[in-house]
Length: 345
Ligand code: WQD
Image (cartoon, rainbow, N blue to C red):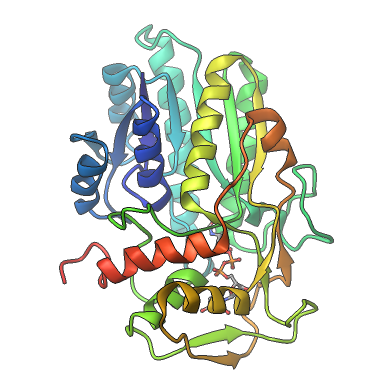
């Protein structure tokens, strides 16, 4: 059974491809490599016991995308493709509205067209990569899926709008099967160290920045504020191992194939860790110092954000299993084995 992964050469997509393959499903990778690297396909071939099918193109090209669906007849689609840098979205909102919302509209229209042409004889099943950012600044923690949604940046706004589009499409055509997955903070890498997170330029996120300090690419970490109402004053987040996140996607696909309907679930561990917890865990995992300096708070940051993952456990039979130490050990193996990410050394 084929599963189409839009953005399948990206960070979450590539780890999901490996996990799908390990479970006997056939991932078809669709990517334009605007925010990923072709080398990933070679690494995936190694990890999956042979080359994966690649469809290179842009999700905004609806006729081409319709052809991909007719050609491969996937039993489900997982939609990863999109831009995801919060800061960039503030500076370039139109890029985010065009690529993220436009891309989702294009994919949904291609799915409708493929069914209408009679060439895709199955109920449309779609898993969407959403984000805990749709919760804005939560009044309390842990966060459940019925918490109010809001957006504090254009990136988060696109996730919220796409969730609403999927809900409207399912209401219009109940044959659609939709799984919305709200990621908390994905970190870590496949234990082989062959694939991992490879941000372009200065990392926005904590884990890749810490890893680059540990390997000597950056002199120190700036800790964005130590005066939050948290145990050690630094921000607390629900970091989840990317391999746990990948298995959550497989569980979501299997749930959609098993019966009609739609669901929205948090994919998190249910445990919060501070910035300094992460620094100490990374030093333990790498054996390297991670020097840091306290810096001013970052605009838009919230003090605490972690999941109540109970619904995913009930609905999908899924829960995260890997610890913060596992996350740091696997991230370090990736970073130390690939000091410049997927770019040649
Ligand atoms: C984590 C903590 C920072 C960098 C973002 C997006 C979210 C999702 C995950 C896509 C915070 C602190 C960070 C640094 C620091 N992305 N920090 N120094 O902001 O929780 O979530 O990434 O879906 O949508 O909003 O993650 O890793 O940027 O920050 O002190 O150099 O680390 O203040 O407390 P965040 P993050």
